[in-house]
Image (cartoon, rainbow, N blue to C red; front, side, top):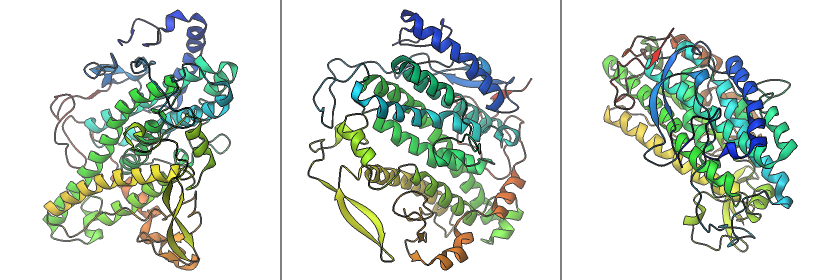
Length: 474
């Protein structure tokens, strides 16, 4: 499925065969570009950036590297190749042919799923728009901008579905995604994590590791959808999402490596001495892990969810790797363990699996997050440092679900409100932590050079050397 780059909107969905849809999307495009210039990355709009651009959706052709000015990036609409005789894999419609048009009875919940996913894409661009001013290297600046343009393309994917399949309602929803803004007091983004600030690169790496990983799991469940255009759109988006998580995981790894090097040079684990040497101490990194992990857990929603059950039974949203699971794919008589707080203690109870779909997905996510911590901890151990980064308990610092307003320590102990208030500063980033991290955020734009607080990557991008000119300023 080659992508037509001669079109005003690059696509592999034969957009030129539907003149009405093409005109509608072309009328939306100027508003998108206006949004990009006003709320997209600051200070780099006129720079030449060594970006990856999709040229087809096949495994050997989805990436082409070259210099592009971001406003000239060819955002487009790319769906994975269709599969013949594909059937719905789960729910009440299991075994029926996948839908190529929106089932009328499911129009509203399907639109809500698409809008919620689509709203996250421009939100993260808005959250990260100031980071270019404090980049730790040209390598990292290029990765930030690659993430940004791909989030922009993911927005295009959802806007295409809204325009193509939901008529006037869809066009209005597409317009609204450019009217809501991250952190706006009057028109905020739909999900709370996408209204948080991303003030510095430590927060960016944590966001791309933890919050973009939530995106991976949400996209993976939508990629199982019985609505085939949505499933095929998300399958391609997952290819790009992997890069975003790579940026986060390797960014944190490089910070851990640099901190351990300084600890060994100074022969100390004193956070104040380590900070004075221009790196981020491991306890501070742990507090940021605690915050970003807990905020991202909230994105999965309530532990018991009738909405999730409805999405599943109607065939709109499956489980992670649905077709690899060995069960009846209907969940009529099965259960799933769910954690909750009862009488001051955390207990695990079996709940109907159909209502516990969010919790099952959260379980998959937690296991995946731990893999990255294991790799960071191996680096700490390799350097002979007696410290381990840990994921806090799933009930820690939650604002949605069974642990809302329950004081749960990182080790899972349930605390009184007073005990929680006394110890919160030990577990979550303080204003002083943010101020310290911000003090390190001095831009480094000489090719091959790195900020003091982060180690160089193990290799460059697409075979290029580390001192390659990844971003050319005007």
